[in-house]
Image: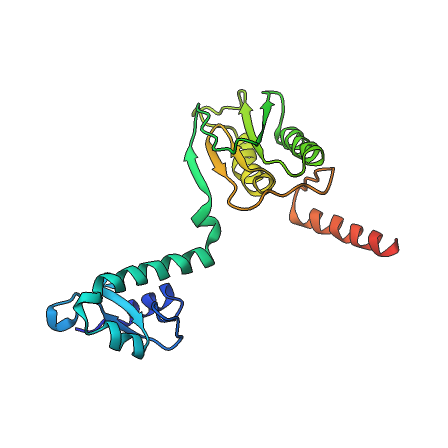
Length: 225
């Protein structure tokens, strides 16, 4: 039986609608193991090839392993192109452990969050630490370690402030400005080149409308100057 239309479309998407061997954009979906050899009509046996590469690889059983390798390499390359963050960020559970992957020359920064500090206070403290170290040592990698005292809920997990601090503020806002980030729950390695903070003051908004209002006022102020 031929491949279903759903499988054909999925294979074309995985190959970016191109031949996995030469990259030509005009492709057909072929069986790696032919139908006459009882090759299954499943996605694992499907490959996107242009007519020329199909003539080279399609009828040659000695090239099947190479074709699978080329297909899988193409899939990985395309996945990394469209989802780089998912591919390269290294995350591991790290409750109660210090498994920070760092370079020898990295500066190790430790920041302690006390039970009395709320989200805004903790975020501001961390931001200021990264900003000051970036100004002092702009070219040196930073390994940031966060320790949180208390802030537990009835189930034993972190309360809303510290959960938001770790999984929203630190991973989304601070990670680009350090080399590695260690929090009580996870350790993450920055997949890109470390950046330095340009703005000295952290601005926290209650909602998107408030942020847009401040952006508008700042824009008008810049135009006046």
